[in-house]
Image (cartoon, rainbow, N blue to C red; front, side, top):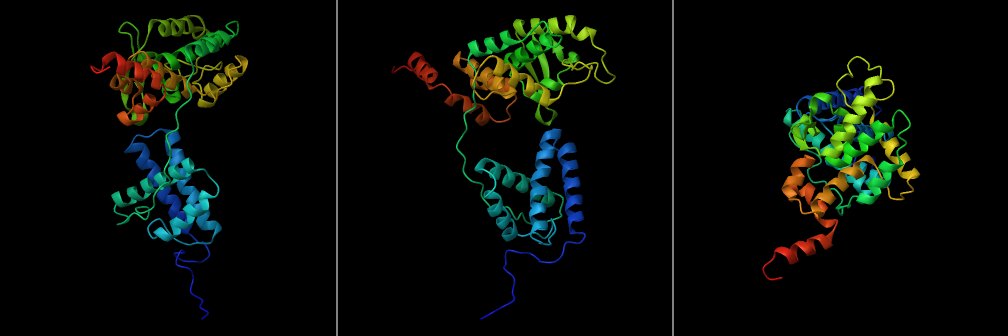
Length: 318
């Protein structure tokens, strides 16, 4: 029997009119919520927005007319199915998580009563162990820096701070002179969600930051509004994420280190080396600013030989 009935996966098939505008309004409100209510960083908000825009593009490309308030599970399942052909499991999982958060926000604001993502499961992911550097490799990277160049002292201080304090890139960029409490051997770090924490800072890291501040930064023509940021570019403005990544990658090439290295590698190395030398996992969690101890526990998998040594040293039956 021939029928003109449309497949149930489509909410409504019609030319797109002002429907995309409704999505744009929803995204704008959601981003405002993420910034004001949840205090997320600019990069996190952009990432969440891209997940929703990917869904909107799918709807428009398939001439599916539906709004954030009426879209149903079947339509989203089709979107997830098509997306899975284009991205890996990790990206797919992130997109599903982002959409769940978006529709939860709509429920929270009483725009919807149900979440169409509720029964959609993300692909199971194995834990990806982060790359780390040995102490010798970190020393090699630092030694590779050309200190004869104006930015040399700054770049050395950047690497020493990333490794010495285990900072995220954004935390390094936002570090201010008023956050440095060297007499107390601490720095005040502003992490995710604008949460602040005090992180110990060693004498070596302090020394290289002070050399940069007193011998290099003092000669810059610092732009208005950037006076308190520790690390500045040659024009006297706050550094960008891209610049930090470029510095690290170029040094890795010059040092002929073939590992996949990013600024985050120094944070992983910081945590791993602390654990290997007997630091308490809870203390590492506090220094890294992890909300959950589960996130910190990934470092337990990096060096099983260390765990065997702990067992032999402390268990009464060994």
